[in-house]
Amino acid sequence: MAEFGIALIATLVKVGVLVGVVLGVSAYLTWFERKLAGHIQARLGPNVVGPFGLLQPLADAIKLATKESIVPKGADVPVFYLAIAMALVPSLLLFSVIPFGPEFTLFGKEVKPLISDVNIGILIVFAMGSLAVYGTIFSGWASNSKYAFIGSLRKASVIIAYEVVLGFAVLGVILLAGTMSTVGIVEAQAKSGIWYILYQPVAFVLFLFCMLAESGRVPFDIQEAEAELVTGYNVEYGGMKFGAFPLAEWYLNVIALSAIAVILFFGGWSGPGIFGALSPYVWFLVKTFSLVFFVIWLHWTLPRFQAKDITEIAWKIMLPLALANLIITAVAVYFLGG
Amino acid sequence: MEYIGFLIFFGIMVVIALVMVSLNYLLGPKNPEEWKDYPYECGVPLYDENAQTTFHQGYYLLGLLLLLFDIEAAFLFPWTVVYRYLGVFGFIEMFLFVLILTYGLLYAWKKGALNWQFEMEEE
Image 1: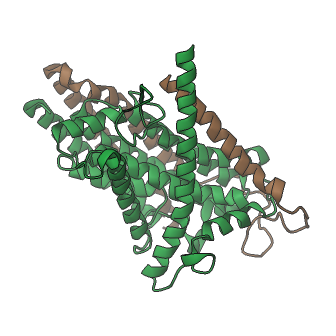
Image 2 (image 1 turned 45 degrees about the vertical axis):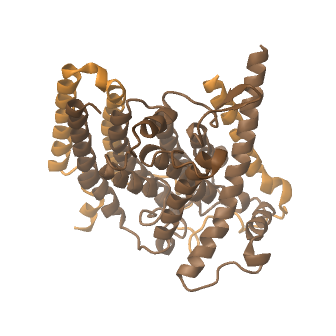
Image 3 (image 1 turned 180 degrees about the horizontal axis):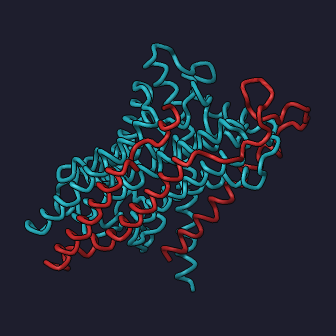
């Protein structure tokens, strides 16, 4: 019983730290993105609130929290509210299987820096990615607005196309590692000393495209499409209810999927131990945020695909590529022994 | 314990989501006016009061494709994990399975199911 109590407290502490850090980081990522976008477009970005505009996320949060709560006429009210939870909860739950470093010993106890070290970690990632579709669909349907509805249907068609490609692309990595546990995949790479991006470059490119599509980033942000749909599925939401959607989709999803990409292809926390005891964490965060930076960089420099092109690229180019990659990997693992 | 940790995390996430939903109701002003809750329609009166009607069947076809291929991917997941213990049996079985899968994809492609379904209207 005491054992269970200690494990419970450890889990609560881990959840508290994770939620605090993740929400804080994604709030500041808004500042970083706006600053970067400003400099890419030869502007200054936010620079009025606080030094270098550093208090801007706080000001935004206060402004969003003190707006009037408006529900559109004819909306399906329970589903309207449920959509927010359905968008936010899966994108945060993605973080439960992300290991930030190796096991360490604290007060004589083995502590793993992740919330649930299950042997189906990658499967949970897919499950949560698929659940995120419901947030979009519910918000578009419940808003009773044509713009929101069209946006949500487009987003759903994009996500379901890329969900399939994502599944087939990751199969190659699981073949090489022989496990679905996120910790196991990182350990397999650390043991062989070779990151899987060298064996699976095609899978990585496919994963990157799927990551952009799932998180609604340019060039796959057809559901936002400011010019035609204003912002798509969340057009009827206001205040913090509006803030929850970009938070979940643009920031939490991008950070979580970047971390998954680092685990699958870039060796997770492995790296030269030049920062002492903290070096696994430093390496993991450096790799993750390089990918996040890359995604934001793409967002502010590329134009947008048409809806037609997005789904046809997924089914006609990426899915055959992923299948070919899977077969070649299977043959190689069979004859060369992994 | 690992799954209990997941459940605890889920519970806390639901609480956070509820806080975000109710924050505007608790902190925001409350002065309803007649046109405030009007759905967005570029500033003109709504053509149709109800937007929750039918939608284009092209989206439905895309959904069917997802069902087919995602479930097939789900069959491949356990196979990849135990692949190195299966030997020649697993190797040949997988080839047959992926072959049938590829044939299904080619069939759908030939029938035009992978094409964007919305251009019929323009012709």
